[in-house]
Length: 226
Image (cartoon, rainbow, N blue to C red; front, side):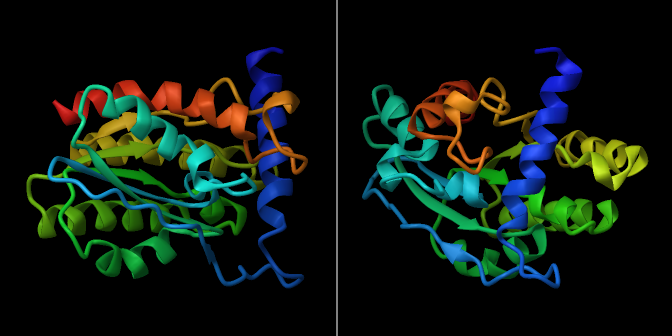
Protein backbone atom coordinates (compact mmCIF):
# COMPACT_ATOMS: atom_id res chain seq x y z
CA UNK A 1 0.00 0.00 0.00
CA UNK A 2 1.41 3.40 -0.94
CA UNK A 3 2.05 5.97 1.75
CA UNK A 4 -0.77 8.17 0.44
CA UNK A 5 -3.35 5.37 0.30
CA UNK A 6 -2.16 4.08 3.67
CA UNK A 7 -2.96 7.29 5.45
CA UNK A 8 -6.05 7.87 3.37
CA UNK A 9 -7.42 4.51 4.44
CA UNK A 10 -6.50 5.24 8.03
CA UNK A 11 -8.30 8.57 7.92
CA UNK A 12 -11.49 6.95 6.66
CA UNK A 13 -11.30 4.38 9.44
CA UNK A 14 -10.83 7.08 12.03
CA UNK A 15 -13.95 8.86 10.78
CA UNK A 16 -16.02 5.69 11.11
CA UNK A 17 -14.61 4.70 14.48
CA UNK A 18 -14.94 7.94 16.33
CA UNK A 19 -18.34 8.66 14.81
CA UNK A 20 -19.77 5.85 16.90
CA UNK A 21 -18.81 7.78 20.04
CA UNK A 22 -21.02 10.71 19.02
CA UNK A 23 -24.78 11.07 19.10
CA UNK A 24 -26.97 12.04 16.14
CA UNK A 25 -26.42 15.74 16.76
CA UNK A 26 -22.66 15.15 16.72
CA UNK A 27 -22.06 15.88 20.39
CA UNK A 28 -19.81 13.52 22.26
CA UNK A 29 -21.31 10.97 24.58
CA UNK A 30 -20.20 10.63 28.19
CA UNK A 31 -16.71 9.09 28.09
CA UNK A 32 -16.37 5.59 29.46
CA UNK A 33 -13.44 4.98 31.78
CA UNK A 34 -11.39 1.90 31.02
CA UNK A 35 -10.54 -0.64 33.72
CA UNK A 36 -7.86 1.21 35.65
CA UNK A 37 -4.80 -0.92 36.29
CA UNK A 38 -2.38 0.34 38.89
CA UNK A 39 0.75 -1.50 39.94
CA UNK A 40 2.13 -1.10 43.43
CA UNK A 41 5.73 -0.02 43.30
CA UNK A 42 8.58 1.55 45.18
CA UNK A 43 10.25 2.48 41.90
CA UNK A 44 9.42 4.78 38.99
CA UNK A 45 5.84 5.15 37.83
CA UNK A 46 4.31 5.89 34.39
CA UNK A 47 0.98 7.61 33.75
CA UNK A 48 -0.70 6.77 30.43
CA UNK A 49 -3.20 9.55 29.66
CA UNK A 50 -5.30 9.22 26.52
CA UNK A 51 -8.45 8.13 24.72
CA UNK A 52 -9.81 4.77 23.51
CA UNK A 53 -6.45 3.63 22.15
CA UNK A 54 -4.85 3.99 25.57
CA UNK A 55 -7.96 2.58 27.24
CA UNK A 56 -7.67 -0.62 25.18
CA UNK A 57 -11.16 -0.37 23.75
CA UNK A 58 -12.71 -3.69 22.67
CA UNK A 59 -10.06 -5.98 24.16
CA UNK A 60 -10.80 -8.91 26.46
CA UNK A 61 -9.07 -7.12 29.30
CA UNK A 62 -6.55 -4.38 30.13
CA UNK A 63 -3.77 -6.97 30.16
CA UNK A 64 -4.02 -7.07 26.34
CA UNK A 65 -3.51 -3.33 25.89
CA UNK A 66 -0.28 -1.82 24.58
CA UNK A 67 -0.03 -0.01 27.91
CA UNK A 68 0.21 -3.20 29.94
CA UNK A 69 2.32 -4.99 27.34
CA UNK A 70 4.85 -2.15 27.33
CA UNK A 71 4.95 -2.29 31.12
CA UNK A 72 5.61 -6.03 31.08
CA UNK A 73 8.52 -5.54 28.68
CA UNK A 74 9.96 -2.60 30.61
CA UNK A 75 9.69 -4.44 33.89
CA UNK A 76 12.40 -6.82 32.70
CA UNK A 77 14.80 -3.90 32.95
CA UNK A 78 13.03 -1.99 35.73
CA UNK A 79 11.64 -4.59 38.17
CA UNK A 80 10.14 -1.96 40.48
CA UNK A 81 8.35 -0.09 37.71
CA UNK A 82 4.67 0.82 38.17
CA UNK A 83 2.00 2.37 35.98
CA UNK A 84 -1.56 3.69 35.81
CA UNK A 85 -3.78 3.49 32.73
CA UNK A 86 -5.89 6.68 32.66
CA UNK A 87 -7.32 6.16 29.18
CA UNK A 88 -10.92 7.29 28.59
CA UNK A 89 -12.75 6.30 25.39
CA UNK A 90 -14.10 9.31 23.52
CA UNK A 91 -11.98 11.82 25.39
CA UNK A 92 -10.91 15.13 23.83
CA UNK A 93 -8.05 17.38 24.89
CA UNK A 94 -10.61 19.54 26.71
CA UNK A 95 -11.90 16.49 28.56
CA UNK A 96 -8.37 15.48 29.41
CA UNK A 97 -7.59 18.92 30.75
CA UNK A 98 -10.76 18.87 32.88
CA UNK A 99 -9.84 15.59 34.58
CA UNK A 100 -6.10 16.15 34.79
CA UNK A 101 -5.98 17.43 38.37
CA UNK A 102 -7.83 14.37 39.63
CA UNK A 103 -5.56 12.02 37.68
CA UNK A 104 -2.43 13.70 39.02
CA UNK A 105 -3.32 12.66 42.56
CA UNK A 106 -0.03 10.85 42.99
CA UNK A 107 3.52 11.43 41.80
CA UNK A 108 4.60 10.09 38.41
CA UNK A 109 8.02 9.98 36.77
CA UNK A 110 6.83 9.62 33.16
CA UNK A 111 3.66 11.00 31.53
CA UNK A 112 2.49 9.56 28.17
CA UNK A 113 0.03 11.97 26.52
CA UNK A 114 -2.15 10.51 23.72
CA UNK A 115 -5.07 12.85 22.95
CA UNK A 116 -6.38 14.83 19.97
CA UNK A 117 -8.14 12.49 17.53
CA UNK A 118 -11.59 13.30 18.90
CA UNK A 119 -10.86 17.03 18.64
CA UNK A 120 -10.38 16.67 14.89
CA UNK A 121 -13.55 14.62 14.46
CA UNK A 122 -15.56 17.45 15.97
CA UNK A 123 -13.73 19.99 13.84
CA UNK A 124 -12.46 21.88 16.86
CA UNK A 125 -10.04 24.70 16.10
CA UNK A 126 -6.48 23.41 15.96
CA UNK A 127 -5.47 26.37 18.10
CA UNK A 128 -7.72 25.04 20.87
CA UNK A 129 -6.20 21.56 20.63
CA UNK A 130 -2.72 23.02 20.74
CA UNK A 131 -3.55 25.21 23.73
CA UNK A 132 -5.11 22.30 25.62
CA UNK A 133 -2.14 20.00 25.04
CA UNK A 134 0.21 22.78 26.10
CA UNK A 135 -1.79 23.39 29.27
CA UNK A 136 -1.87 19.68 30.11
CA UNK A 137 1.91 19.48 29.78
CA UNK A 138 2.52 22.64 31.78
CA UNK A 139 0.11 21.71 34.56
CA UNK A 140 1.69 18.27 34.88
CA UNK A 141 5.12 19.89 35.19
CA UNK A 142 3.82 22.50 37.62
CA UNK A 143 2.70 19.74 39.96
CA UNK A 144 5.69 17.46 39.36
CA UNK A 145 8.62 19.55 38.02
CA UNK A 146 10.83 16.54 37.36
CA UNK A 147 8.24 14.59 35.35
CA UNK A 148 9.28 13.45 31.87
CA UNK A 149 6.67 13.70 29.12
CA UNK A 150 6.09 11.80 25.88
CA UNK A 151 3.63 13.44 23.46
CA UNK A 152 2.09 11.17 20.83
CA UNK A 153 1.08 12.83 17.55
CA UNK A 154 -2.18 12.27 15.69
CA UNK A 155 -3.56 12.74 12.18
CA UNK A 156 -6.93 14.01 11.02
CA UNK A 157 -9.65 13.31 8.47
CA UNK A 158 -9.64 14.19 4.76
CA UNK A 159 -13.15 15.67 4.90
CA UNK A 160 -11.90 18.46 7.15
CA UNK A 161 -10.01 19.91 4.18
CA UNK A 162 -6.30 20.05 3.36
CA UNK A 163 -5.63 23.22 5.33
CA UNK A 164 -7.15 21.87 8.53
CA UNK A 165 -5.33 18.55 8.07
CA UNK A 166 -2.03 20.36 7.59
CA UNK A 167 -2.54 22.57 10.63
CA UNK A 168 -3.64 19.64 12.78
CA UNK A 169 -0.67 17.45 11.86
CA UNK A 170 1.73 20.30 12.51
CA UNK A 171 0.51 21.21 15.97
CA UNK A 172 1.83 18.08 17.70
CA UNK A 173 5.53 18.35 16.78
CA UNK A 174 5.28 22.10 17.41
CA UNK A 175 3.99 21.53 20.95
CA UNK A 176 6.65 18.89 21.58
CA UNK A 177 9.39 21.24 20.41
CA UNK A 178 8.05 24.26 22.27
CA UNK A 179 7.51 22.37 25.52
CA UNK A 180 10.66 20.25 25.14
CA UNK A 181 8.94 16.87 25.41
CA UNK A 182 9.82 13.59 23.76
CA UNK A 183 7.71 13.03 20.64
CA UNK A 184 6.32 9.90 19.01
CA UNK A 185 4.90 10.84 15.59
CA UNK A 186 2.23 8.14 15.24
CA UNK A 187 1.21 5.38 17.65
CA UNK A 188 -0.57 3.27 15.00
CA UNK A 189 2.37 2.93 12.62
CA UNK A 190 2.28 -0.55 11.08
CA UNK A 191 -1.23 -1.20 12.40
CA UNK A 192 -3.54 1.42 10.87
CA UNK A 193 -5.05 0.21 7.62
CA UNK A 194 -4.27 -3.46 8.25
CA UNK A 195 -7.58 -5.28 8.63
CA UNK A 196 -5.86 -8.24 10.24
CA UNK A 197 -4.69 -6.08 13.14
CA UNK A 198 -7.88 -4.13 13.77
CA UNK A 199 -11.26 -4.95 15.26
CA UNK A 200 -14.47 -5.00 13.23
CA UNK A 201 -14.82 -1.23 13.55
CA UNK A 202 -11.66 -0.95 11.44
CA UNK A 203 -9.69 1.33 13.74
CA UNK A 204 -9.28 -0.01 17.26
CA UNK A 205 -6.40 -2.51 17.25
CA UNK A 206 -6.87 -6.14 18.17
CA UNK A 207 -4.72 -7.82 20.80
CA UNK A 208 -2.20 -8.60 18.05
CA UNK A 209 -2.25 -4.96 16.96
CA UNK A 210 -1.60 -3.82 20.51
CA UNK A 211 1.51 -5.99 20.58
CA UNK A 212 2.90 -3.93 17.71
CA UNK A 213 1.97 -0.65 19.38
CA UNK A 214 3.79 -1.79 22.49
CA UNK A 215 6.88 -2.72 20.52
CA UNK A 216 7.01 0.75 18.95
CA UNK A 217 6.43 2.53 22.26
CA UNK A 218 8.96 0.75 24.46
CA UNK A 219 12.09 2.46 23.04
CA UNK A 220 10.64 5.90 23.82
CA UNK A 221 9.85 4.88 27.38
CA UNK A 222 13.25 3.28 27.85
CA UNK A 223 14.80 6.62 27.01
CA UNK A 224 12.63 8.48 29.52
CA UNK A 225 13.20 5.98 32.32
CA UNK A 226 17.00 6.29 32.26
